[in-house]
Image (tube, rainbow, N blue to C red):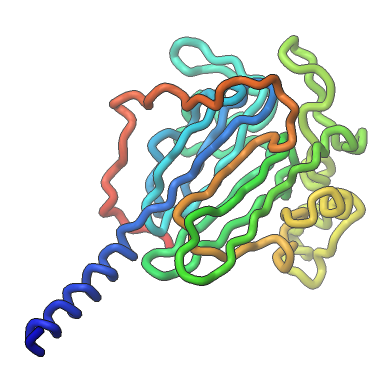
Length: 280
C-alpha cells in the first residue's frame, strides 16, 4: 500500500475509533426477580436528559432495557405497593415520586435503595454505587457487562433483606392490604433528623460525620453499599461498561415465570434533544 494511502487509512481508522468511543451509550437492563410487582423509577442528574421512561410497572419475572446517552448521570430505584389510576396518578408504599407513575423529575421518597451512576464520555470512566443513605426498601444487585478495555468492573449492591432485621425505630410498616409487615427501613437521618445522623450543620464533613450505630448495621449487612454520606472508600466503583444489569431481589425464590420483557414503550416516549449539555 502506498505511504499516502496507508496514512489516510490509519487517520480514518483513528477518527472512526474516536467517533465510536464518544457515541457508545450504556444500557440499563432492569430485572424484577421479586415475587411481587415493582414500579421502577428513574431520575436524571442536572444537565442530563431523562431516560426513555421515568417510571413504569414491572411484574415479577419481567425485564426492560433502557438506553442512556454518553455522560448521563442519575438514579434508578424500585417502588413497592403502588396503585395508579388510568391517568397515572396514585401512590406507593415505598419509593414514591410525587404520586405519579412517571416520576417526571421527582426523586424517590425515602426509604429507598438507590442505584446511582455517572457515565463517562469517550474514554472517561463510569462512577457508580448502590446507596442506602436514604434508607432501604428492596435488595438489589448491579453487574457491569461488556467492559471496555482491560479494566475490571466489580459488581455491587445490597442483596441482604434488611427489612427482616430493621430496628423497630427505623421500620416502615405496610398494612393497607397490598403488602403487610416491614416494607422499608429508614435511615437514622430520616427517622431522627439530627445533624449528626444527617451529616449536616457542623457534621457536614468526613472528619466530624462518622459512622453511627445505625449506619454500621447497614454496612455490616451490605458492605459494598453506601451506609452514610461519607462512606466513599468502600462504596464507589469505577468502570467502563456497555451494559449495567440491575436486578431487584436477586436472591428471591419467586415462582418460576418466563423472564419476559415488558411491552414496548408507547411511541410518545422518546429522547429529548440530545444536543443539550450533559454533566461530566
